[in-house]
Image (cartoon, rainbow, N blue to C red):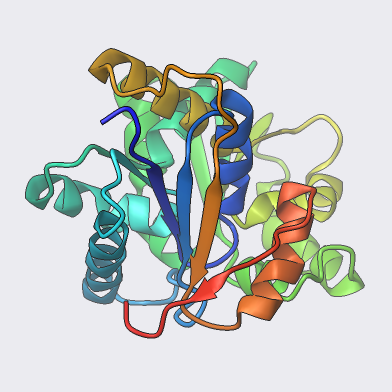
Length: 266
């Protein structure tokens, strides 16, 4: 079990924010990453479709005998995780709970904003998680569906991102929000524009760090964490456009990714 890799999947490249933190927290662990780039974004799909895609992604990762699966996608975490946990014996964790815990720790006045895809926001998953931990906290949500394709295009520093952020987030002004959860793993790539639209006093919470810590703690509790001092290997798989993935992956990870294998049938 200790020698097995960790499996990670996302609708596209956003889950690489989680991979980056996993490499930092557990540099000796092997990682298998699958980005469903042919079917991104998930946030505009129906719940039944999201569950179907999520099941297929888990089945793909199980081909590698993974010891843990991380759903590095907020939409799949919100819609698919409760369903997946009932049918697969491998431990599966998402990014919702870690993100909510981090925001509660960061907020100073108990007023938290959440931005995400249509499906994530409609699910109310973050609100439910935050209130299950601290019922007194006020949560305000806003869907930002254009952010995922903009991040996938690598347009983080384009004026269109600033315009979209200003339009989407104007409704948060006057709410007294001091903390905003980036409820999609693609959004950290757009942090600059999002922060500018919200103002300097609002802190942004990226669930990737907290998710990596939760994964580490879970593996330690199960006795499945790799004990040696090797340098872990990471293999990347995508369902479409591997060349484009490699280009954007460099921006997420801060280093070159040498290869990504295209999977034709997930």
